[in-house]
Image (cartoon, rainbow, N blue to C red):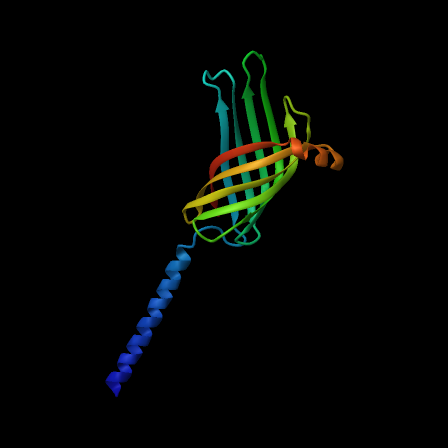
Length: 182
């Protein structure tokens, strides 16, 4: 009886240790953000014609907070530059927007959808409001480090009526970058 009891105790302890170590290993390799985490990302975009006479590039910096493992809210600062052939002036503009994104899934690849609202200012644009819908994909290369691609449909407005009128006259903006959760 004592051999059987000792064997049962050893199996129970071994099973408990195995389950505990498995749970700890899974917790340590969790991919992506947790509720309360912050996020910082840096993205870029650019284009040129074949002779590099007409070129543009832009940078976008995002800083956000996870309200849940799926919901991110934050602020986005973008700066864009354009050099147009035949024009002696270079064009700079920027935009500052608040955004909210909802992420799907809990795996390395996380598609998301969202919206942004803010202002645009600079050379060649009227200082005005900007709003948009966005979609994208984050892919976690490491548990807290990802690459991302995002497409935003943006439209300008200076009042509620002009937002409704200008929605159909929007433009697409694309970015690719990387970020971290901390």
